[in-house]
Image (tube, rainbow, N blue to C red):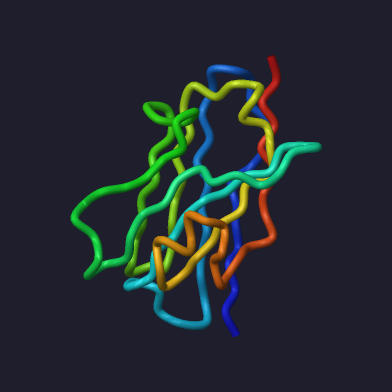
Length: 126
């Protein structure tokens, strides 16, 4: 059974940093695209970042415009884990952050991923 478990959320002041982790289990995901989404209160879930699987990657990673230059996505295939380093956090980054995994990057970025975590809450105070 596939499980994605996020961790690393919490309360941080504006300008601070957090590092989210998502540990995947149940199968090997090295060839799968992995990514992060977020959902703020009263808003729809939105794409944040994605990283292709091995064999598909040319080194490119993908970000929504609002986090470019502040967030960094990375993965450790040996640990079946994807990370999101979040720097220079802003109050508008407050949301529940979800990890997602899919065999197709194109499906993942369109919020059509096969596998989802339950989320971790990030709260940025002003």
